[in-house]
Amino acid sequence: MQITHRTQNNVDIIDFAGKLVMGDPVTEARKKLLEVVEAGEGQVVLNLADVTFMDSSGLSVLVSALKATRTKNGDVVLLNLTVPVHSLIKLTRLQQVFKIFESEAAAIDSFKEQ
Amino acid sequence: MKKINLKINSHTENVELITECVRALCLLTSLSPTSVDGVQLAVTEAINNVIAHSYKGESSHPIWITISLQDESLTMSLSDTGVGMDPILLEANKKIELLDEGGRGLFLIKASMDKVNYHSDAGTHTLQMTKYFV
Image (cartoon, rainbow over all chains, first blue to last red; front, side, top):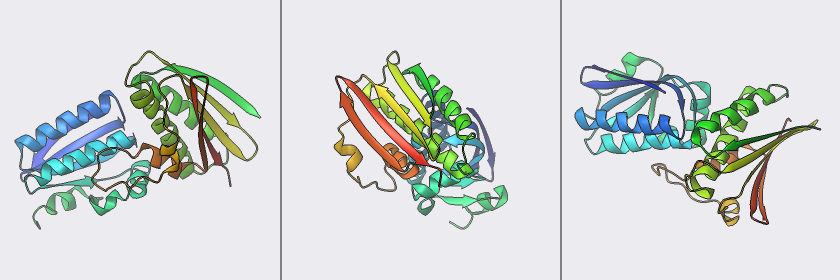
């Protein structure tokens, strides 16, 4: 699991690459996300363009990050979902709680509207 | 019927070995790409459950996986010798709140596969999952 972190306009953008699955990948992703939320404004774009596979423990990372941002009146939005990840999000109805974007600019701009 | 038997130790690093084998075997079938993703997800969740719950996170226990390809279906059987699972959990439609952080594994297995059953015999627990091609 590769994780990179950038910021733009006070929005934290995190790029995940690889498989977000139980074990070290989920442990590392959870740790990084919670660190970013703690240090930042709680406005997070998760770029999942290079996440080839995710299981339910990967979903739990997304949900825990969402809850953490909401304690700061922030949000987590999802960017560039691959087909299997999009299927998983729909299957678990999590598109009801995560905004999903296909453009990084639109994802970042979504925080201006809040 | 074509059949392959695999065995791993219950370490999370080994899960990918099985899921990629299953994915490759699915390519021998007429399953759609979406169904292949679902089968891969189901076997991942099933092995994760064995590691996390039946073996309580211990990494040195055996998990046996048999994959059978028939004319109209693919069947995966996962066996372990841990504490097992209450079969009622498989029958129950547990309500999952959107912001629950866990508890989706069995739901995803049942949603991705066409037939799922579970049985225990002399300390060995087996989850059998079938996906039909049509």
